[in-house]
Length: 577
Image 1 (cartoon, helix red, strand yellow):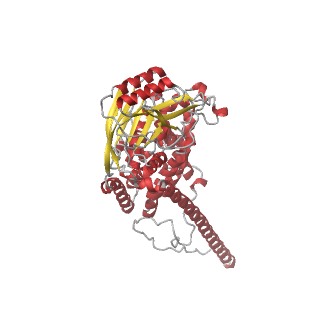
Image 2 (cartoon, rainbow, N blue to C red; image 1 turned 135 degrees about the vertical axis):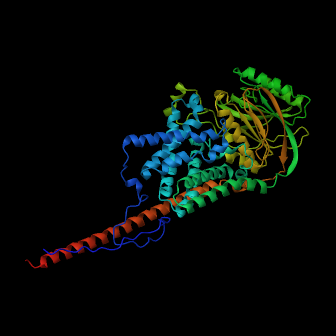
């Protein structure tokens, strides 16, 4: 048979350039089936990694989740927050599929919760791993997003999208677990910056959410700078990271200092670790009596500083009335008592020499610590931990306490109790209602030698910066502290101290509001919109890619069939020799 010649052509080489973008109209391709792209429906692809390798990577993600916790109090390595997510993000980026990236994000989130809230073990016992697994699942969305946008080869457009979308998804995850019924907004990424008023300039603009978004954006930029193969994505990431890092100090410098309107002297009473309720009350009274002769405007006791119902216990009330008369200052006492209706509640009670002026009843109770959700189902936890044996009764709404200073001038205070310092919206409501000072009452004696007291007091600094109001926290066993309207610490009593801390608080002018006071939670709402838009765009892109791949496959099949038919015809018509 005659030899058939095989057509040949020149081998073309192309310079190494940035890979083509995935969004938009597909570039013209030769008549061949396109190579599968790694970010197209990764969750449908089998995981090529053997099981041992997968689990090694997942356990690495679990450990990586602990790294950001070192930036929170009490380790307090705030600088670490700006790069602490990178190890976990890298594991998500390098996952073999979107599904595996989501799983690694889940494990990362679980490791973060386990480490940040390890001190909850006395309250929830074996429930902590369950909480970690449930909350960790929210970070699965971060893992999938990182993999889809940042897997190699990385383009400039995907880098820019990632710098917007990854922080948005992170904020959405934090916002979701911040719902009161799910435990509240504890250990938000932005809280790592509580000792840096320049960074907290972002909090005054968009709340703690904007600080979290900034930290997540810088971490994303660092990941891109370390892993992008081409110069342009690296340059874009570096530029965005620098701009974000500079935004907080810039806002802080441009923000007008809160208009001064005098100052008040506040005394924070810390009796220390006293197990007996009556002895605790007496220790607080002695520390308060020692303030006589000092120009104090307000005295603040810690949470649960008395177990007497001051409306029905004249002896306890007389002690407080006498202290108010002796010091010339009203007293905000922490009442944890069974009321006339038979239920226990926690109240902040304002007492003057004339008696009880007003009270605020805590409305957001600590899950498991003050009530057990679904007690008929989860009540067994109380038998294996220090979870609440009886549910506390919540209040019906928030209102200011109408305090006055020692001259009789109005000094409305937003008195919030313990866990409520974690909620930005409550402090913002107090500021909008006209509070001149934010007052937090705390009791963390159960967690005395853990990171909890330092984590707790840091929230008062953040609430001060968000609202432009001075804030104080009085704790039974520490930490008690005071902060000015920009979140700068003015004084503190640590967990190893007892007595009364007297601090002069500069006040802001009545009616002064920060941007965050005015606009509220615009940042998490915007993050939700960005996340939803990215999800819709990803779905549309996936369908377009599927249709394009189907058309290309059909064309390739038709061309192959045509060539086969032509070859068969040629062989059939060839003369025999």
